Length: 278
Image (cartoon, rainbow, N blue to C red):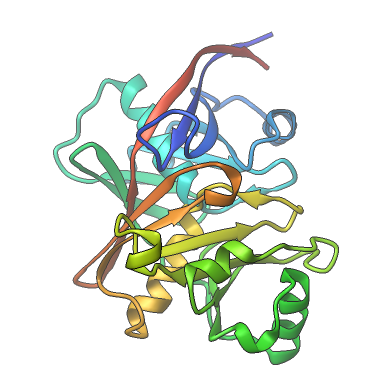
């Protein structure tokens, strides 16, 4: 069986096992769709990625992103984790942007000190959420619909629906019933109270996937929230979001708007390195 270089990395944390894990297979050009999907199902991580030679001009590498059940055109923590592994294996040190090719097109990535950051891709869908759907989501989250201050579609590949709650405390108190949220990707965000919650972040985020799990730290969701909330004047142009608290993680997502770009960044830590036979 062919053997491939493999890494498992932790994204959005400088400390291993405190962020969101990602499995990365290097040199996967000859693997079939079925092999990639089967391996992603076996790892059972939120995403597994496969690095390939680029097919589009201007790209440094191509990545395909799989959940255990489907391929995604784009996802945030796989973008940063895959770039981290590509830099380690290629031995290259680009002076400008690193350009990733994925199903959503070309995504720019840059190094900010020890962090990697990606430029948030345009939203495929935005705008208000149907009130009937909001009621269903509120019921599925175990909260009154009146607690939801606002809701927006923030679809940038994964079809996230974002909810704004009054506070971090409200976000942490959510107890989802996945049978009622079936088929939906729902994110919730609430502001920190500096006196009660500290000042190392401004918002708390939680992400509930369409396969009945909570995602530890989610780049695509945070990108969508940033585009919505900064654009609406609810969030400042530079902030840090915390995620994963309920799961015992300590993810930190760095958000910064520069001109028309919103950059989503975080630390990436290598945890497992070796080879895999597929």
